[in-house]
Length: 316
Image (tube, rainbow, N blue to C red; front, side, top):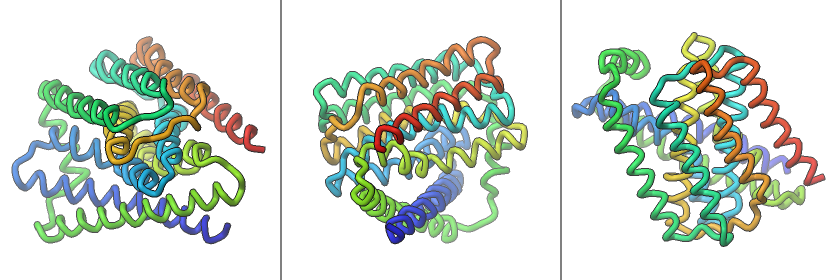
């Protein structure tokens, strides 16, 4: 058991560092070849922060543990709203803009509903995966097209602060390649450790994916959102959470299903209901005053805590 915990811990560290390396290296290289900061943010950064979920899910599916892959995606989306958005709002009320409320959140709700629909026959096959991936491409195109109305000056200023242009091609490429290597290693360690823990304590791979693996792969988003809130930029949390949830289902789950069909029989209607319910809950919260207040953050955190308690109790 001790070795398995070390594998999980080491995997989480590698995944977090790897995601950071890929985002920074790829972003710097993209800027050098003339890609706008806005486009980089909507593509490289958006998918880079979901890279841990993607690597772990694909690795789990290839290792014959598709339930772990499915639990990872579902659990990550639930923790993104309940744990990350809830915690951030408790620290500082989270404001949003019209595009997130009128476009991104409805898309997140629709994607969650589509996901539940695909679970009808208990299997997410390769054809389902292709549909999801195409949906992810469509969403990216919509965001890039709609994002042209955003302030390029403000985006560039924030981008220059986060990714300074001070290193050369070789360094930036090395950071990106190193990040990819750490992601692959981290995914290997985390999946091996999680499967061993599940076998050792008698938990199903789905439950391990919904809890330990899901929270672990969401740590980069949690750290980013909390730091942003403490610096007075809590508004970044909404885009971070909503964008990650959409990419997780369309890109991560879709891509995993393309590699290997996913058996969804280990997922209960309660898991799917919490996934869909937390997505729906964000809309009225943000629609009222265009923000998630502290008490609303408390509600989200309470929902997440109750769900985790339910999962743990069901395994005792």
